[in-house]
Image (cartoon, rainbow, N blue to C red; front, side, top):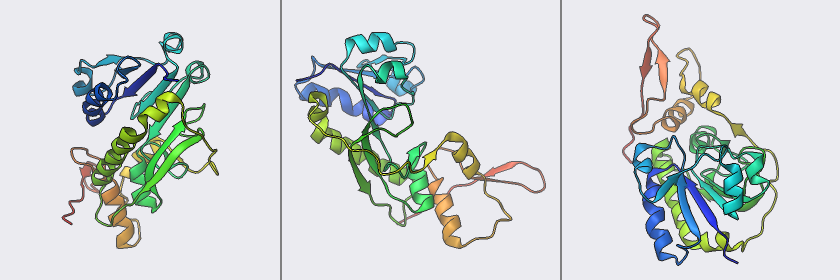
Length: 239
């Protein structure tokens, strides 16, 4: 059975991908596209997308849709929604090792698996039963940006192959083996500060810097001992 489906994404690259993909998939009558109220302007301007607040509109969404797919959506789904409608998240991390914010950062910094996890949404963050997951290797020259771009490409490839299965409910699930690690925004903010008095190996500092290097973003910094100002830095790697 083809379920009435809503796809919510706040990612510009996915917003470019989905309209043409849905049009070519013979699912146009069953799939709608949306983004969050605070999505990037390039997504908000895309006429294929409506703006949806899942918390304020949970009653309407539960009436109109049988499946809601979150792909790089920054909203937390309320229980009033995911307990009434099948809600699936495509998470750019390998659960349970990197649940939560910026999973590729922690994969690089902690030396754990990067990857993609497709899972049901439950009351906890990136925690629900798993539909599929796979590892994306981190290379010695990867930064947060290059790893993220490769993960995003892998997600698009997976969606291209498996989207109809999701819409038709043609999948099984399994529980996570353990709770793993949940990283919040405050963990990332704390990790961004480099302690100039810290003692460690060059590899530890190299991994921290590349994990925080994402083109166009000021992440890693240290405090100037004289002025108290933040001095930002990022790593440029030429493989």
